Length: 139
Image (spheres, rainbow, N blue to C red):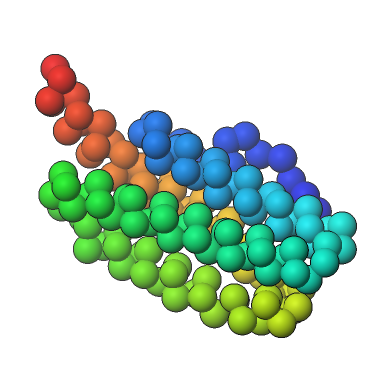
């Protein structure tokens, strides 16, 4: 697995706090990739894994609060995607905790690919909705 530089790590949705959270997730993903490439200690990889899952969970919860507050029409569809990703990420935690570097690599590939696609469509739709709502309140 080769470390990659991407800026921004995922497609921008043009809602500052969401884009910042995507960047934070990208930084933790980068830490995991760097750790895997450099042969980091298993304990360090476990710590990064837990930080990554926590970061993703907090991000999803934040988006879900925003969507509920604004009565986003596609909340159910968007939330279903979050729940599927949550479930898949949890499947990787135990193998990574046991020192399975292959599982850690697959987890990073899954999350990176999933988040790029999710941010590019579902989050972009949500972002446009939120921007329009905010404009309506200030305009």
